[in-house]
Amino acid sequence: MPPKRLRQKHSIHTVTALAGGVGASKLLLGLYDVLPDPSAMTAIVNTGDDITLHGLKISPDLDIVTYTLSGIIDPKKGWGFRGETFHLLKRLAVFGRVNWFNLGDRDLATHIHRTALLAEGKTLTAAAESIRTALAVKSRILPMANEPVPTIIESDEGDLHFQEYLVQRRTEPIVRGIRFEGVEKSQPAPGVLEAIRDADRIIICPSNPLISIGPILAVPGIHEALRARRANVIAVCPLVGGKSLKGPSDKMLAQLGHEPTAQGVAKLYADFTATFVIDPADKTQAEAIGALGMNVVVIPTVMQTRADKRKLARALLAL
Image (cartoon, rainbow, N blue to C red; front, side):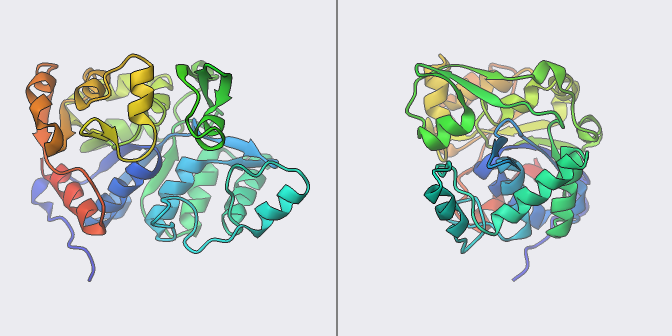
């Protein structure tokens, strides 16, 4: 049965979402399903996770968002193709090549295409547009910046690229700091500031605030653009009951001296977010979050089914 589309009575015509990774893609899929016109949604996606392996330019968050909206994502893993195989990766290991980062056989075509476009002088924005168009995704998908801005984890084991920390070391090193290398020389990708300026509603997806949303905010001009639209910004807390549903958000917040709670995340967003959405599991923190000058909305935020994703999306658009 096709999803019920949101009625126009709420006067939400355009939506811009800041996104990174699996948690964000779930909400984006719900929005994609219920918006009257999915082409009215723009996703601004974290590229701090991007990495070069085997000579290929890999953009994990861009691909997770694109694959999810195109319907080819592996729903259990939340990344890669459904029913993917890894024959090429196994052959690379025979030659002693890096194989800790999973690259599926069909997924590799995306990375080869992106790498070729970049080698031809095209931008990451142009590559993202080419990929989402080929996969028939109606919504616009923008990288936060065209320039490389790798997220570096400063740990007790030394500096690690975020993928080394997350995938190779499985978040075992203790995080001492985070930096976005070269971000001061970057600028918002074409269309990013306009998407923030012109949107009827801006949604901060339930992504890791430090390494998914943080890199986007660090690109010069984006934080300021959000602050100028604060009244229209809604953030969905990625923690439920003080725990991450996916990834190391809670652990990273605690190791860097932040509260691993809904209130702790709200403090990071308060200057550019007017409405903060928390799960009923965290309703006891509503008053403290409200004291930060934010409107607090308590609704279920756990998205286990497609229906859950649509329900949360409808609720956010109806606020």
